[in-house]
Image (cartoon, rainbow, N blue to C red; front, side, top):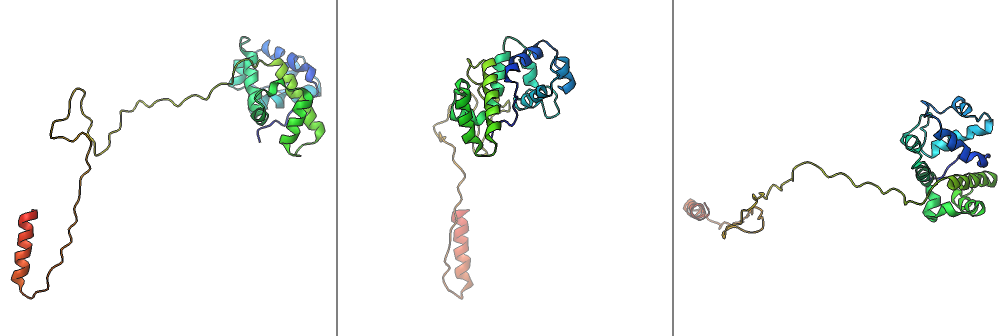
Length: 213
């Protein structure tokens, strides 16, 4: 299940939190002390740290990740947040690609189904309220980032052991097959006649040697 566990009961402060982060340098560690330095000293404000971890802004130790630094660019900050929301609420977006347009009640009903009784309704409603507040601040006008294609290898083309690569400009001769031909092996079974005369066998093997090389 890719759904969050964190939420805030101060959803009205969501935009204030992010604006304060934009106006400050990224810390070495996003701690309660740093949060107080931003002007949020309430114990309820500390719930933001768990949300930022699930959005991919912080690692488990509270250290800023690449997404945090990308967010600090005001020209894309709200789009970066949208990417984090899509990841944190991946299961919700799987059932509704425009989940960011849901109301609190609609988000609650969807999440209630997805959590399958693992959380109490009061918790799910707080998560739904947090989700809607995050979406209100984020910018979903751009499509989610596409998964990058794997880079092409710089290694030279591998040649099959039965096929030789022809230099450019060369053409096959008239005696040459246009397709590679694998080596052929023949297995010949010989039923020898019953005889007590050694000369019979000598003549037979000599004939095979002369004709088959």
